[in-house]
Amino acid sequence: MKKTSLIGGIKENFPSGLVVFLVALPLCLGIALASGAPPLSGIIAGVIGGIVVGSLSNSNISVSGPAAGLTAIVLTAITDLGAFDIFLCAGIIAGALQLILGFIKAGSISNYFPNNVIEGMLAAIGIIIILKQIPHALGFDKDYEGHESIFDNGLNFGYFTELSGAIHPGAVVVTLVSVAILIAWDRIYVLRRMKMLPGALVAVAAGIALNQIFRMTGSSLAIQPQHLVSLPVPKSLDDFKNLITLPNINGFTNPKVWIAGATIAIVASIETLLCIEASDRLDQQRRITDTNLELKAQGIGNLISSFIGGLPMTSVVVRSSANANAGATSKMSAIIHGVLLLICVLSIPVILNLIPLATLAAVLILVGYKLAKPATFRHFWHLGKFQFIPFVATVAAVVATDLLKGVGIGLAISVFYILQGNMKRAYYLSREKLSTAGGIVIKLAEEVSFLNKAAIKKTLKNIKPNSTVTIDARGTSYIATDVLEMIQDFANIRAKEEDINVELLGFKTSYRDYETDEDSHIIVTHTKAM
Image 1 (cartoon, rainbow, N blue to C red):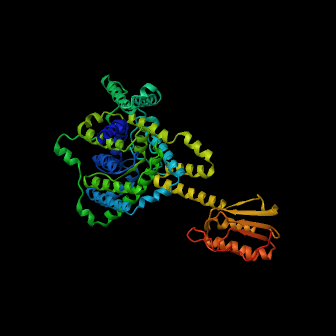
Image 2 (cartoon, one colour):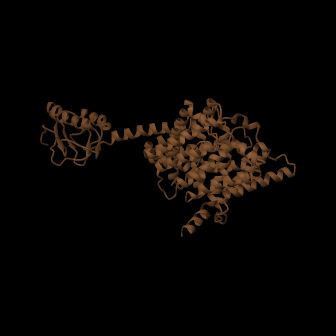
């Protein structure tokens, strides 16, 4: 029975695993180059992220691998430490720390990421993907794949200003053909039913075939090697051994290595938790991932990757989004992508080096569009400003800075609106204007915290002398002590001085641990009958 289930899972998820493999291949190489690391280190991290983390994690959608969000940290660390083999010790430390974070259940912080911030992060990643892939789609490959920073030096869209004079016609043709194939595969019913033949693979095959035709005919449209995938091609076993770097254990005596390891562990864990929340949102079945188990899986993955010369990894939004869009139904898809990376890099690097970056850019541009489609913006607009403003602020901040800073800004704005909303929703007034209200009923919410003190204080302050006020706490299970004392002072002191008729309903002498005390009495000592 298990065997049948395994075979069914492989068959169902092979197309999505293949798509993720095609997306991950250039990203693994590009992130390694952008990090100042050997090219194969990115592939090793991709293989471990797929096979090891994919097997240990219980996330059905997320895919792990080298992350663009770590490139700046890794590049700085390698430069400061002076050697990649010393840096690998930092990766081992990061993996061990992530394991500890998993065991102490630090993954629970992901429960406090609001949906509008997570959706804003996804939309921002989609916009970044599109912006960064447009040059590759036009044949201008000056920047590394996987480098997701838009504003590199102030207001600078990378190399976009140079783009107009460097467009390659052949790359444009390959991009347009690839986009046409991908759109047709999604919309034409007959093609959509060919589940075992994903549109991304057909687009890649078409891109290779077109470029080979251009080259054989001597056309000026032929795409040059610098615009193709560039994998190292070992000619012998010794060449292959030389491509792999093992950690230098002397690095553990360097305090800088420990600082780099702790930094990587913290940043990688936060990015992973953000991606897990996003992946669960992308899952059509809305399954929930055990985030503490995910941190343990990431820790083991980083330990193994660093021991055999790989980059540190996280769960990655771009790969996970491509996985979800390709129809993945289980973590088998992530495992398949890792196996394909391993097999293809070892056996057919020459064939992989024929793939134009333009055709892979087409795949990523459509992934980006699905993440940042206008319907998502309309959805949050209709939910109101409390949802829309944090969402769009997160989008703008992630695009303008980076993932962690952008999400931090989005969280801060979201918390501001949450606090503002709590302060406004602490009670219900039976009249809209206190100045014209003859009799006022203030019905307190189920929970009234110190955050609500300012709003209630302002309302009580604006009540005019000789008014009649009823404060109803019969449906309230908890009131903060400072709010309770403020209401008591109002009822016992100010109401007496200003001849305000006060009736308090349902108040208790204390509210311990959010539980009501049935034997306690209302707090007021001075009331006037209504």
